[in-house]
Image 1: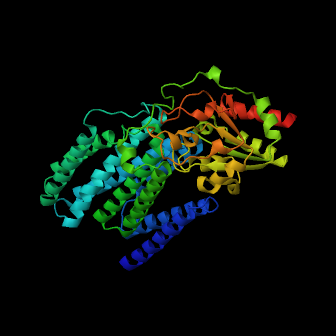
Image 2: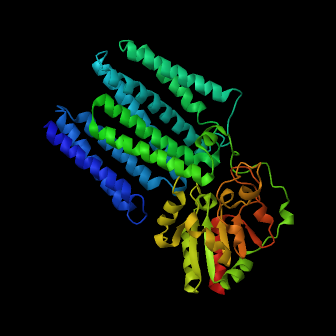
Image 3: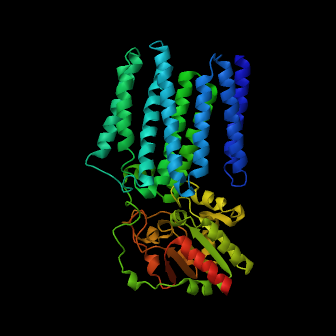
Length: 458
């Protein structure tokens, strides 16, 4: 039976790897997601059969309750709240790993090999930090607490001391596994560390935080796999942990910042409001939807740059209708996607996919950046930091060095935005005041709806 179980685990692991590969492309993402789920289902079934469980009552009850919660969330959670849900899922993954690992300790007691006791400590530490940190990330994204960095004197030093305490206590437990008090104190330290390690991170850096917490949840699962001697859990956890780290690195490169700067730099404002624009709204040339429609009608090429404002207004469906109207007039339309646009990795891609925007219309920053100089109109909807020229010129800016979309190189720039307030980094955007920029103030959905009406009337 052990040999059969390991063979099935190997098949499941192959499904995970292939599914992860397919998730790398929008065209095969659904297939990859399904294959990964199938692999996990097979692994779970085989594990349950292999353990000779006598009573499945609680397991079946858990499956029903979990499936009901998952189905309800899938049907009711808005796309704008997807980052919050992902943060919660990361947290639940970490909590599950910690609970399972501690349960195994309660079952086995002090009779644990050295390698198992080490991975038990790591599972509890990483799992609890992931759980609490994810709850803080959820609270920031949901607006239950300020999205601005929360700092206090000696914060980095305090976090270092907490981590050191956890590691020292872990060493004591490995030496004396019969003393559960060490584990309980480690859990308490991890609870505090989960809070203090996430509160100094601002809203602009939430995509990186979500990726990192996702990696943590995978590492916690892998450590629990070692505790249980379960190969498929080790493999799946390692895959999640590694992919999360890779994605985190990609996000940091897209912002031209180190991970340490993201975690400890305390960059950002509460809600992207900043401290106010440097110039008054009256000094900016404000245009109407009718004015914009005239310019768009005479354009040959348009690049649309979606941002978080698009998600908040839930304007993706009307935007797709607008783009189709332009294409019917023979205008070339494309979407430019910045790696950190939105509040989680791939947020804009998922949002536009929900509106059935064709995948071949979506272009990553590196693919389309050189085309802005030959583009008639760059239409920005709810984006700010990712188009801010300050990233090129202001050396004292937290955005300096971050690769941005070259929107300012287009012949005409249209920006749909509620106000002149800076983005999450709190840096005023000089592009708002550029003579070739047409500012369209208002809700993204309402303004794009007006553009649709005006385009139809031309």
